[in-house]
Image 1 (cartoon, rainbow, N blue to C red):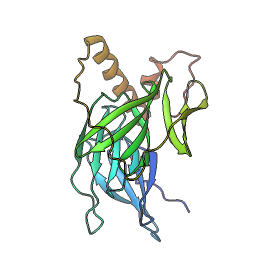
Image 2 (cartoon, rainbow, N blue to C red; image 1 turned 180 degrees about the horizontal axis):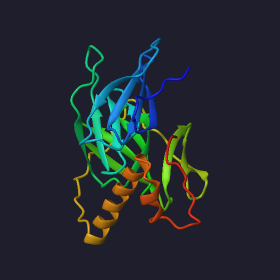
Image 3 (cartoon, rainbow, N blue to C red; image 1 turned 135 degrees about the vertical axis):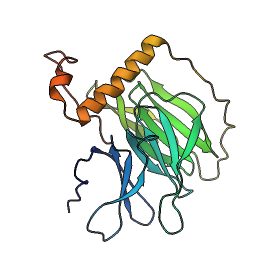
Image 4 (cartoon, helix red, strand yellow; image 1 turned 90 degrees about the vertical axis):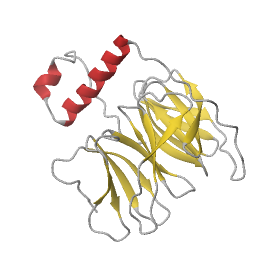
Length: 232
């Protein structure tokens, strides 16, 4: 079937399926996560926070039953608990041991482990420990890594600029693995030039969501080719 977003929506970005068969969908540029219950005829808004997760992107469930989401524009990771009645709990920020750079595709790799593609150029393993996540870089130097999925002992990473998938050897942690201690979180300063680029990037994505073609035209070369950043 077809399950459209509401009128004046952003765009559909990622999809995750819960243990009960419900389907969750991220809506970028409106800060919403929609849910399609088993047997339902339409999507419903399950979680919404335009301030914290405006460009919500990757979605993944872990063994704790919570939905983990990242935000492409601000490089944040959040946990959304699922209440006993199925409603969304309060958004919980997850502190990461390394900064996340344009995080995109997100997939589970173990009871408390996620794989994440980052368009900043890498694929990483995120191990959740309470409200913190240890980040271990599996491969960097990947120009616009947008999606990742795990097949056996291989993480296949979608790399847009190379227009292909890269195979990265990866052995998922066992269910009983305790994992390494979470390293201290490192704060990195952003230079004025880097901040200007980040601000321009956020503005550009907003213009794209609002379909401001004339405004965007000044940013792109005549020979530029747009490649959509979605789905793993």
